[in-house]
Length: 302
Image 1 (tube, rainbow, N blue to C red):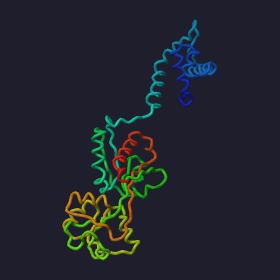
Image 2 (image 1 turned 30 degrees about the vertical axis):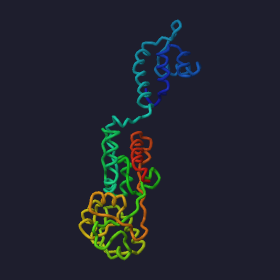
Image 3 (image 1 turned 120 degrees about the vertical axis):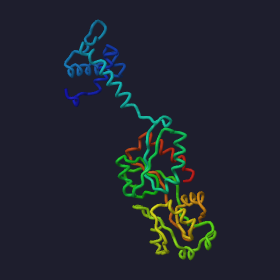
Image 4 (image 1 turned 90 degrees about the vertical axis):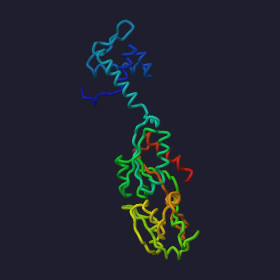
């Protein structure tokens, strides 16, 4: 018998007949009319080449073949109902799932401590893994399932097939050491142009502020180029260089180093930090829970 020729609805009819031993009562249980039930029983007999149910007094008693099929068919029907048709649920309190995020080092610093604290409270057995990669590679990792979420500035993901949710709007500020000899509470454009600058250019990830300066035709002396934002703090607090960075990173540096920040002397671009995910994960309960948890953590800063 070719399984492709089997109507699985007939297995439900068979199971009802085994239980109720009556075409009428089985039809009522399945909300089928008696003619529809009779037609289904006839198809079952043809499918298995056996009478299956034979009238004996007031009942339709199963044949030996039907008795033989009863237990495995019931198991199939129950498995379909319980494991295939039952909507998937996610219980964070007991889940041992590992979530993978694509995020740059700057977002790891700003977001991960609070996310991990949330997981410790609500999903203590789950695990978190982060991946750093060029922006153009993030789409492939989400499409393939290598990662479930991208967190940060990913303009390449603003396209069909991906969902997004904004977390924060991030302005740029200038980071300097606390006792900088010339830059006080404000910075003029002349001071900005005269200063030596530290610039971060992560591999495969353009610096939005650098692009802004190029479009404006603004040139300044770049003393040092770095690959990682987290290298800035010891450099800025031990020299007179200026580093123009997103404000949330500046807030972190102020908390952990001998630095402060001032507003940029020009109106700098604003970066929208989003969560991104591929549509294949849109309905996944665990994924939806994590998205909601992250949004709850940071939405007050939106």
